[in-house]
View 1 (cartoon, protein in one colour):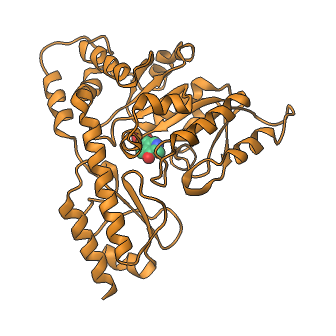
View 2 (cartoon, rainbow, N blue to C red):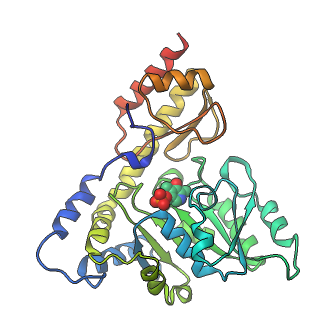
View 3 (tube, rainbow, N blue to C red):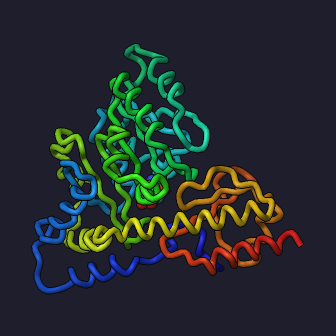
Amino acid sequence: MRFDFASDNTAGMCPEARQALLEADQGHIPSYGNDEWTQRASDAIRRLFEKECEVFFVFNGTAANSLALASLCQSYHSVICHELAHVETDECGAPEFFSNGTKLLLASGEQGKLHPPEVERLVKKRTDIHYPKPKTLTITQSTECGTVYSLAELEELRDLARSLGLKIHMDGARFANACAGLDESPGRIVGSAGVDVLSLGGCKMGMALGEAVVFFNLDLAEDFAYRCKQAGQLASKMRYLTAPWVGMLTEGNWLRHARHANGMARRLGDGLKELGIEVLYPVQSNAVFVTLGDAKIEKLRSAGWAFYQFIGTGGARFVCPWNTSQQAVDDLLRAIRSLSN
Ligand SMILES: *Cc1c(COP(=O)(O)O)cnc(C)c1O
């Protein structure tokens, strides 16, 4: 089986992350984050956003999202998310669990993006004591459909959220791909979205594991360290989680890899269109969604290609991780072309 396009997570560590990990693997170093690597990683993230922020490191995206949301909500609150959001579809109820029952309210919207009038409708639908009080809006950038919100779209959501008294969380599991796709700086993106708390993806960017939770609203970070510890997210040998961030964020390595991944997805998307295959969403990050039909899906699998089908029958998702080769893209296109013959 070839897993080149199955997920960002089939790819290994990028060289810069691995190098930093090896450098951190020496001698005796303070534990639980009281070390120089963790300090350097936090500082690198602060420089990346050119903003004051509080930074925490956790093992995965589910923990980052659910603990971030728990810090924004009480148990009687609700979070508005897109109906395809990872927090709703792929976290096994962790956001509800870690917030002791905060409810997710699902908003629809084209191309994986929240439709502002739909957000407003969900908030204003009820104001009585029997409805879980809407408190937070969570925005995925880039989205689960591989699209990217423009700065104008983020500003519209931000202004709406503020007018409705909602806090703003961003699920940035693929934030790097969004920066590359928009060709905008991290600081401008979180600024346009008015992000209070960001789940910043490390794993899909090319690290072995680990995500950062970044608080731009500093008050909300109070006690977050305890929340992480209680949830089993405080790494004792924290340096192994944080050193790779230093490698990734040096000399724009993260952005170079994300640009490459997005470029490979564009090449794949263009190639598929040339083959007459329907590409479902604009290719704005590192994922391509297509309608292939059950017969072709079956044949492509038998030909040895692994990929996910999320979106009902006949749809397939191809993701280009940081180390996708042009050769692999062309191999896949050739395999798909041969299905029609
Ligand atoms: C991958 C992903 C995550 C994190 O998933 P984990 O498996 O928990 O690390 C979060 N949000 C989105 C949109 C993702 O694609």
